[in-house]
Amino acid sequence: MDDRDIALPVDPIDIDLENKVNIITAHSAKGLEFRKVFIYQAVENKWEKYRGLNTGIKLPPLNTPKITDDTDSTEIDERRLFYVAVTRGKDSVYITYSKRYFDADTGEVDTDEKIPSRFISEMNVSKHIQHTDLVAKHLEITKLLLEENHTLHISDHNKSYLRKLITQDLSLSATRINKYQQCHYKFLLEDIYKVPVYDSVHAILGNLVHDGIRFMYIKRNHGRLNDDALFEIINLQIQKLQQRLDVGMIIEEQTSYDVLKNDLEKSLKIYYEYLLNNPIKYLRSEQWIRGVVDGIKITGRIDLLAEDEYGLIVIDFKTSQNIPSIYEFLGLGKRSDKTHLRQILFYKLLIDSVSHHLALFKNKTVNRLRLEYIDIKAGTVKIIEVPTQGMFEYKLRSNSKTTKSHDIDMEIKVLQQDLKMTYESILSLDFSRTEDRSICKNCPFRHHCGR
Ligand code: SF4
Image (cartoon, rainbow, N blue to C red):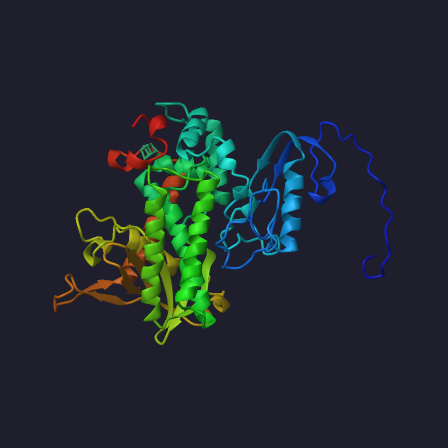
């Protein structure tokens, strides 16, 4: 019909609009009113045009009577439309946004983290909505969902349903394996039952640093990475941090905004200095990979795929200040648990599981896996790098002349066994609580477990 340009007659739909949900655009909502209004995807680039990296200046709030002359007319229209949407609600208006959305075309999760619309922070919502302490809110929710001092038992009827769900839907990542190994019960709550949890302060900071680093690489690819660009990137990331605070997305611990801002700024400056002396070439970032190993679905996101004269490197950025020594990294210390080694080798499993997908890696082989730790105290970037196969030589102490060898192929085999055992254990519905109470210290389910 489209090809022949033939229009089909459309009969007007006669429905009773009372007590129904109306899904309409803000434009067509003009002049209408509803009891409750939900504004969806209130993120920059949806409600207002993305205006690049130099957006460090806050625009006048909605209730400012006169909009300054230098605000462009498109933005005035966008703000008016948002105002129309917000004022349609008689009883209440819910404004929602997420860090990421599915891309309707690719079916994949957007790689870019979304920024809440600036129109939200201009409304000063945090003054009106009592949700600045997300932890208290979270505890309230988990108290409703999960009884205090209680253990969830899975009925026989639900057991077969859960097994089916796990077989069909569960993908294991390095993070999930680590989480399951730390506490099976926590894994059940977070990854099977999907009980909502808040982002830790550390995760929020890590995301903002990752994003900032990605912008640096992109700028450098265009030959535009300099002090001014760094200044813009830092401002943008600080603005995002501020926006998260404005809409009440923090705070787990009583970490002050100034400490977070300082750490964010320092981390980006340290990485910038490191990047200036590092001729590595950016290929792609935030790349999700899904594969299958021994019939088990696996997934993971590569922070950065880069290239230098020796080949392709997968890089994982770390902002945690618990930086392991080589000894601990290899799991040779009494207290080390190989968490980071497992994380980095997991990329190898992922890459091999999608080897048919060589275009992703430019038909080249990834020959190194690298962890880059941003050490705020020392002001440097510490690197731990391992090959994707063969022997890995390391010095126990930096000033030592003697080296030891470690077999990466063997570690990959161990990881594969770990993956299999973890999956089988999950499938057998072993969701027991950890005996190690130190793990419970920062767990959001403490009240429920009575720990
Ligand atoms: S409080 Fe402890 S036992 Fe309970 S889920 Fe968290 S880590 Fe597991």
